[in-house]
Length: 331
Ligand code: KG4
Ligand code: ZN
Image (cartoon, rainbow, N blue to C red; front, side, top):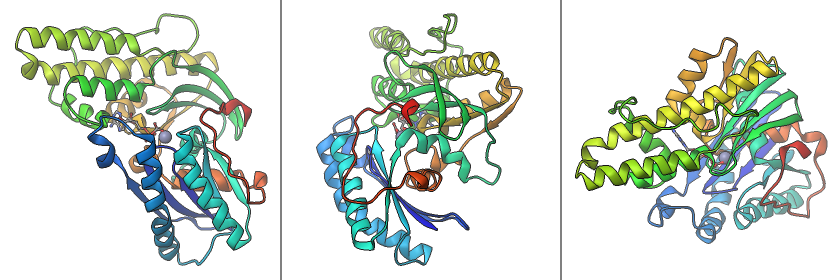
């Protein structure tokens, strides 16, 4: 069975074909980063219009690469995300499914991130702890089995990717700042500036990143006043990255211990962060799993494999599902 996956929840149009017999056959991505960079963040209306321009050519391209003319099932991201952007992927998915006379699967974007490591040669077995970290979410989830999720902790304010992006903006690194900040951090001393590790001594497994962002803002203002910002930029970036990663890893280890879980999956855009990947591996005694780098950030492959695993919930085409908010625990 061939599943066509379509991702359009934010600023990336991702399309892929996954075969239940042969694995991933093709995938393609168009990033809108350049379109939004001038505004310093994603502009929803611009995102929707660009998905509309890109999605059909990308579908034609992946079908050709996969060597098929049509899919047997179409999986699309139905949320959480920007409703207008979701409607484009969902509309195309439903339209094509009507034309091909095949069913559709409405996929949860974060379940897509969670299942992305299943595309790798040595996928994790259940149960595991998932650290899902992206631009919109920071979650710790006990994954007892496929579809059996308990949310252990979430962020009380900013998502960690958002904190990376906002800190990068304060440092004048443009949008999206996560990867740029991580690169600059390589040149800095991560011990140079004392920053908080929010919440790590509080009970429970929630996160909070707005205080860390404010602490960085004060450091930037101080450096500006002293005329030393250029000199301190890399140290601030490195100290921020270290504090954010320490916080995520400490919390994840606390949760894994409490729930007696021997495996951790790190996924979502911030899962591409090299320091995070190496620190989880260094500090956790059990096994650690990640998607390959390109499948950490938004992509069609994770939606296609999630659709394959959720095929029992496929339904007739004709109604587009688009949810701005959607809890994973209801899946
Ligand atoms: O999963 P994703 O592509 O989109 C959402 O679902 O939000 O995640 C995007 C987020 C952005 O905040 C971006 O800055 C961050 O992931 N990100 C990184 C890195 N690569 C992407 N943050 C830190 N280090 C990275 N290497
Ligand atoms: Zn995402």
